[in-house]
Length: 69
Image 1: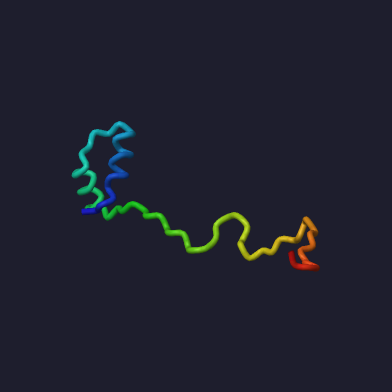
Image 2: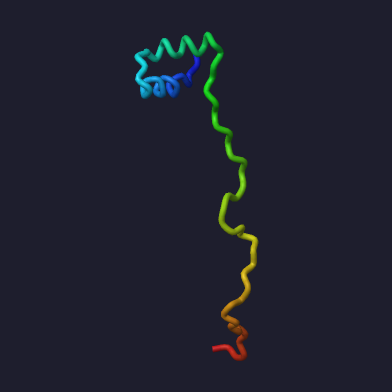
């Protein structure tokens, strides 16, 4: 039997139908109906700035040392 009949069962109960989980699973298996499984996201960066962007120096500080402490 299909293991994803629970989603359709919950939808039928919300619509007011009187059915059992086993009946829904049998009917789905007989009709060959399956629930759609979400596609997994491909690995990568989603949103935000990528880490390889170099930001300009907005403070214009000079960190050169003339003499040691």
